[in-house]
Length: 123
Image (cartoon, rainbow, N blue to C red; front, side, top):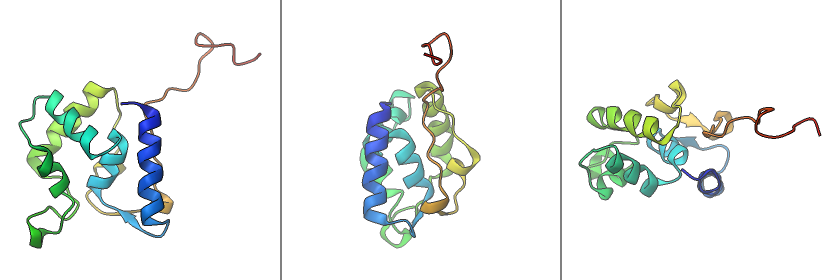
């Protein structure tokens, strides 16, 4: 996943929600993958037979056929597999089904810190 795309999606979500809002599990995973469509594409690439509408529906209220922001149990193993294929590390916070305050959330990406071999960090 393109890290710039992930940062842009994160800024978009935060600008709409504000810092006092809470992010659902589905929203946190969508941010991690770089958007709902990117999450869907990663799931398809991992071999999960799912349609794009289902991914969006996970965040809808249960009264409207959604999942109240929680990923269904049968899809969680596919998300973990998709993250592994994308080179992402999912944390316990990412997988926690409880909403998390935006102000407390730390969004990690798969960016690695620079090493001496990558570039001369002491120049």
